[in-house]
Image (cartoon, rainbow, N blue to C red):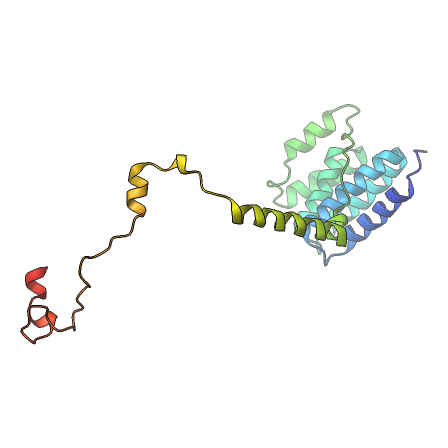
Length: 200
């Protein structure tokens, strides 16, 4: 039997299991939860990993579930190959378009690796993103960034003379005459009926 998880890891495991199983959660949250569950299982030992992989195999076969979540569950089976899952994975590859996730060659390669086990990664609990503290920290950082941007001066070394000349607005010496305004020549006609064609 593997090592026991501390209280916070058990809580992470419960939150991650709930996040993965709940179909109302978004695809990315569910996939991250599955990876967190795998990492926690690897810390507990082979029995825990085998039990989790069997649960992931059940999820991967459930066609009523989200396709990308199913394929991420199948990818966990490829990353930690067990011979009992090989036929099942090959069948998925034959019957569904898995090319964006894995191919038959990936399955062959994975099962060809003797003693292949995916490395343990330290994955943060995906639900921590939604805690009140995490939200307040993101808002604080965003406010700091907004304050810095408000008082930031442009770097004038990046401007050349042409850029500065292009940014100066054109100012007319006399006001612009509209088409329906009286003609400035004093004829009393509208500009469009008098001097517009001549000035153009």
